[in-house]
Image (tube, rainbow, N blue to C red; front, side, top):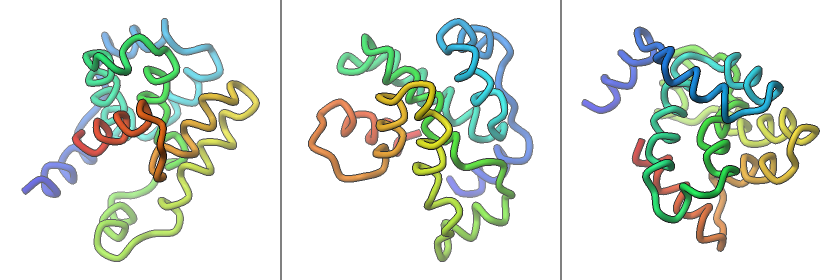
Length: 139
């Protein structure tokens, strides 16, 4: 049932303009440009992660993790629903590369944020990054 909801969200969901305005205040101009060019599905997912990070007592005071929430999937580009379904069923190399692609987009802007994006799915001893992974997977 959750996968059906994800498919419907992919087709019909759009970020709320109120949230986009809040995000514009947090991100730099270059970061915001990256965010705004993400697929609507990824923007909405990222906003959901951002909302959870804002409420989390471990992460909410660290601006990098607020930005990570918004930009962690920026390397996914605009992939179709079929590619996303393929990823779930058998895997997809393009989507598996999204942390590296996101890193490349951010490394000239903010190296610490770029490294967090690069490692947001990897095994890590960093307590904050582990907490972020839990939130991302729950969203």
